[in-house]
View (cartoon, rainbow, N blue to C red):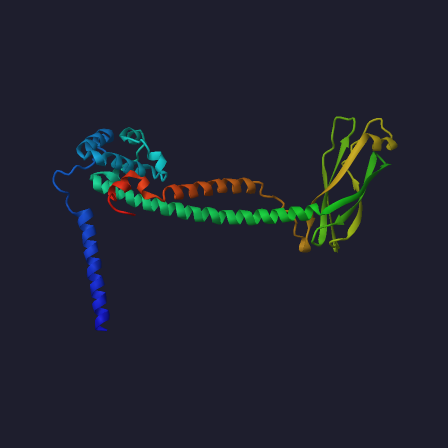
Length: 314
């Protein structure tokens, strides 16, 4: 027990000592004559920056400028710092948060502040990458489901299609006859058909018509069923006899949806048409995040980090 208490005491002393050093570093008065950057409202930042850079050692100037640019922009690509000078910093739109954060700081404090921001930036990239990949997993799952459903729908094949035209009380009646073969892997409890008529010589095309049918006895995989219904969207052709409709018109019927057990639609009523675009956008962002994490891995590529750690290995 005495050894355990002794260990706790030693660790407490070490922690207190470390905190004391941190306090000395950040909170103690600065050495008289040490240049500080004045970035408050009462000072022109560009003038203050020029005066500050003039007072610090020449070998500090580029690292300090790059440190200030990183604090302002959070740019994690070291290539974007190549050749950057105070003029590039002065051309940026610097908000009050930035100015408040660097006001009254020495060159050493600015360099260490950039070092902390760099580490925070790496963590932010990691967290965003994790979020992007999570979103990608969700979108891929939805696309996989959507593709599977579309494949199932494509397995509902229209066979033996024909149209019988008859004269009705007021117009020509078009009876559509066809067979559906279920080549999918699921039972079908309902179908939505879409019919359309195209004029071979006429300019107009009839509007589409959707018909829904449901049945308790499903169409099982590998089996088929015959259908016949009246297509009310058949156009009237002036001056064309009943037997001439077949020559003047082309007709089509397609399966646009199906119902599963319980009436659930195979294809959602409002499909998400943005899934593929969202996936592509996220893939682009993932690639960019991976690139930034890769190029920022070598910390000495940043002049402020290299300056702070000169003579030491990372």
